[in-house]
Image (cartoon, rainbow, N blue to C red; front, side, top):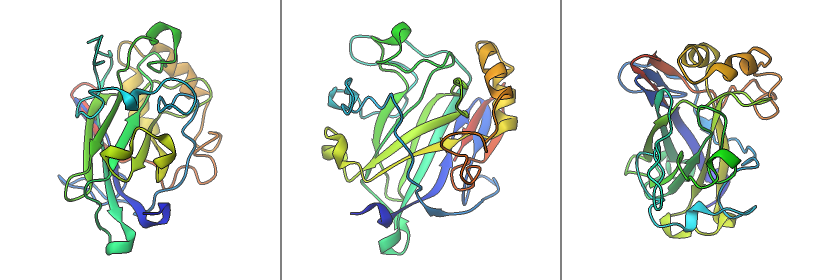
Length: 236
């Protein structure tokens, strides 16, 4: 399996009232382009053992919802609910669903903290999880809308591994990328309680100025979102 044999056929998130989709969408949502997963840095807080903390070695990392920590803590991350949905397709097999690949997702919380790294949540492992893709290549991770960190556009991270057995070694990842969230959706989420500092951070940014999405203004990584911040968000 090679990176070039993969493509994202939908990148999405769901929170009470909000949904997003970056390609062919269900439930009447408009579709956008489909293409090979663009490489993007894992960033400084992957939690995959490459720079310290390794959540992928922990029992319980394979799960659906990622809003709460697991293991020694059951702390739940506060914030606007959002479900991230990714559909992974096999380019070498007629774009069939890439069943069985393991997808690891992670993101910051509503205060911009990354579990296992940020001092305030160093003992937590929430907003991190792994799923094996279904027969159609789809995974869904109920969580929360991430904050807008200083200098970075609102986003979620993901890596694709050949299978669940391979996740304990970060060098096995066959794709590493990020999903950008739309500006209007982000502004609506940040108007809700708990996201006050994100308002100022977002006001100083554009997709073009972002260090990851700036090359093409995230044309191949921008999620489509439907719903509202009160009811929740869904993005694919």
